[in-house]
Image (cartoon, rainbow, N blue to C red; front, side, top):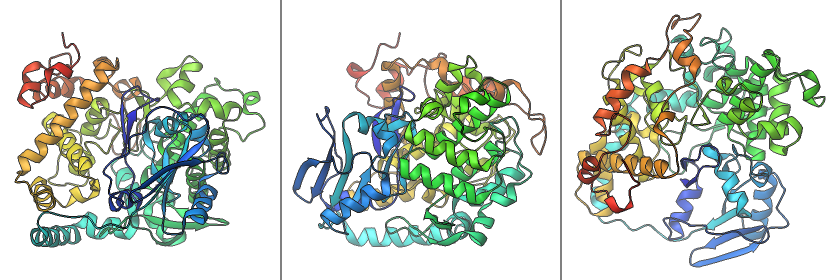
Amino acid sequence: MVVTKSPLTNTIASSNSGGYWGAELKFAGYDAIILEGKSDAPVYLNIVDDMVELKDASEIWGNLLDKTTTILENIHGPKVRVAAIGPAGENLSKISGVMNERARAAGRSGVGAVMGSKNIKAIVVRGTNKVAVKNEEMLKEVFSKSLNKIKENGVTGQGLPAYGTAVLVNIINENGALPTNNFQKSYFDKAEEISGETLAEKYLKRKSPCFRCPIGCGRYCEVDDIKGEGPEYETIWGFGSNCGVSDLGAIIKANFWCNEYGLDTISTAATIAAAMELYQRGHIKKEDLDDGPELAWGNADAIIEWTKRMGQGKGLGAKMAEGSYRLCESYGVPELSMTVKKQEMPAYDPRGIQGIGLNYATSNRGGCHVRGYMISPEILALPQPLDRFATEGKAAWTKIFQDFTAAIDSVGLCLFTSFALNADDYAALYNSVCGTEITGNDFIEAGERIWNIERLFNLESGVDPSQDTLPKRLLEDPISEGPSKGWVNKLSETLPLYYTLRGWSENGLPTEERLAALGINQTTAPNLS
């Protein structure tokens, strides 16, 4: 988890990445690294167990991720794990991320720009220690039970291992909730051409799992002279249907360049989609393109070239690297940016899935799906099926899912395990490692405490509860075609009840009573009057 204040949204940022780097840090003996201040010149942090040093980064500053990682591996040995920023982070792009193992991205909320602002190019880690646990016998028993549940679950045992997260492309499209042409539509008639099934058939070379992962959803793909990890579902959607592109090879290439420059694939692709709509409506002119490819729907060359220009910070690309909200605002039409709290929304149209719309609107880090993944019950019927068009009960479900996923993040486990595991399972794992005796309810309450503290941070930062909303298009313009035709998101029905269930005021402010019940220190809270 990369945690900071977001330059993109002004909210809390907690950007998650898989791979091996996090485990390596734990083997070195650390739970967290805190970076304060700013170096006068580019440096990188080198950690080998108890040895911690800042080293000159002039040789690697300005390099793409693959070359940066290769240089550091040559210096410190092939067993090190490297987390680094690319040129986008160095240029302080508000949609840049921190990359580890070349292609694993803590991508959201502009965390790469924060690292770049400190002149930190990379953090290299090598750990050789074992991790002590309180009750090894209990852990073996709980682990075995959890592993069986993961393997027996249809999503974690079959769908994700076979097709990765891109298994969702056809599923979401068949439900009429695959955003297309910058959310102007919600059904893509060429979805099969960019599906997880097509990816596996034409481009997949091997699986690429995270450290000791029993699911193995990561993909390693190759097209022409481009090869590397990804793309994930969100990336395929963003560069695919949302830009009107059905060329999966081009999408793989755009994903590759996001990894090399250190860009968040969701925000990058969504910004290109917004630029395409700006071009469609005449706000961006042909002369603004600096001889770059036309920003027209379906232009596969455009998603590749404009990704590079955003990473390089060149011309219009530099403007786009600030994210879609600032881009659209500069042309006087911020409503064309499909964002919440200035962060681009992911790959689910909330007009066709009501609960995910409430989750987007109330997320502490802006447009976000992973904290409160309502797709699980509304589309995948886990842990039980919910009517995706219904508003009844969605406030309660959204709150529970937000608290649940906040707690899962806090213990460093992958959210995909929650398709198979429940709160009692996580509590048992936690107890066996830490020697505690918490219950499943305690686990979820810890998540609620996290959610409220993050809310307080945002309030202190000036993020007004009036920002708990969705783009006007999604609230007022019905879907024009497909299985969700005629629907808008009914946030006005779900948001007031959500505030009530959270124990907040009708204006979305945490009450002193609820904070006290959660054991949150009143003296650290902002003025809630």
